[in-house]
Amino acid sequence: MEADTFPADLADALVGVQRLIRRRLRGGVTGPRLRGAEVELLRLVESRPGIGISEAARQLHLANNSVSTLVNQLARDGYLIRESDPADRRAARLLLTGAAAQRLADWQRRRTELVGRHVSRLGEADQQALRAALPALRRLAVTLHEEAGET
Image 1 (spheres, rainbow, N blue to C red):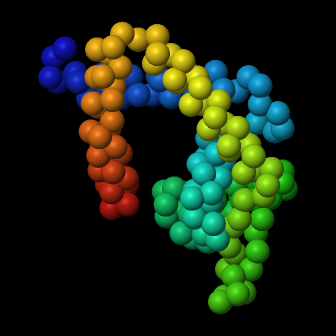
Image 2 (cartoon, rainbow, N blue to C red):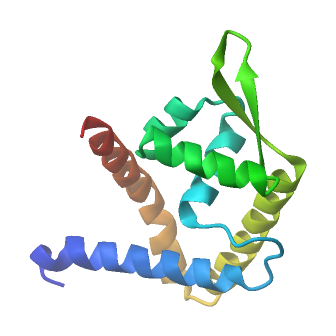
């Protein structure tokens, strides 16, 4: 592989894997289909219960009104609780419902099983290469996140 095609090849591979995982996991989902941004918001609220809309917008690199729209949809569908912040009654704090926590846990379990099944089909050298690449991929994600915060 030529050095100048590596960034594009890497991006294509990552997007392709993510797209295939998403498509494979869609089957067997009960309830309304969640879009990528909705899942990202639910995962963020899961990791940071009580997060506010403005902070969620910053973390997801979305406009406040876009996050508000997502919150309204997810609350209507029974996945988010929007409560007033005791320190500032005008601000909202977000919490997952039990249904959302269960759906995220099910998705995580199914995703882990799917990826694990396919990784196990690879040869030992490929499995080791993927393990070895994880720290670099995580650092790449950090630099992409940091750059997104600068814009």
